[in-house]
Length: 276
Image (tube, rainbow, N blue to C red; front, top):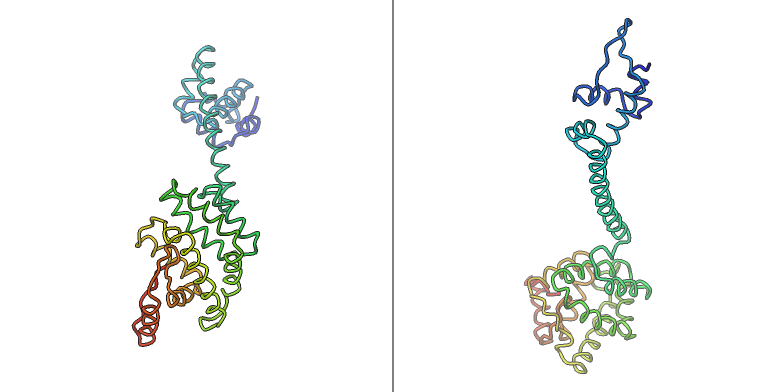
């Protein structure tokens, strides 16, 4: 005969669990012996193991009581139902594991594979990870908002990234991230970028430069994130505006003279927020 502690140990549960099953009426509570201890036989171990197994499978205790009292056929059917439910839970947990793995991998959690490949291409080119992260953060809401346009946008991006001028722009911007706003290399970068955009607009048409269909408020929201994350980008757009273009998320041609006036107004305390 077994003490309650020995019973719990054999069945792989705690003494507290045994007492809980007694209280719920799942496991009969034996009489005490002459020494005042409850003694359990092998049958109690069998029943307790059944209770533990069913409870660990997620079967409510009220249902456990029914199953323990069921005949062999009813019990087999119930076990089949439990197995079916557990298989479904396993599949769902596997999907969760895959999502967590994607989260650990980073970009692929919320981005189409073609965008992930583009970001990996930027990394392979040696682009600063801070720029890659900003690109990623911009693509997440874009892909969520207009998934049907992602293939078109990415085809354009893949084409552009093969251009040495764009590659040079990304690499030069990478080097400029830790520089001050008055660094002359930002001026050089603005010159390069303005020349490239103008040439692209002349060759492909302005629709090619600004055919994003992104509403201005949304573009400005994305721009704010870029400027907060990469402060030199704000100064770069100010310089770019003086050269005929403005915007980061949404490029737009402007009058360079207006850009110079805008810059001059800033010098007199009339600063206006540049658009991305």
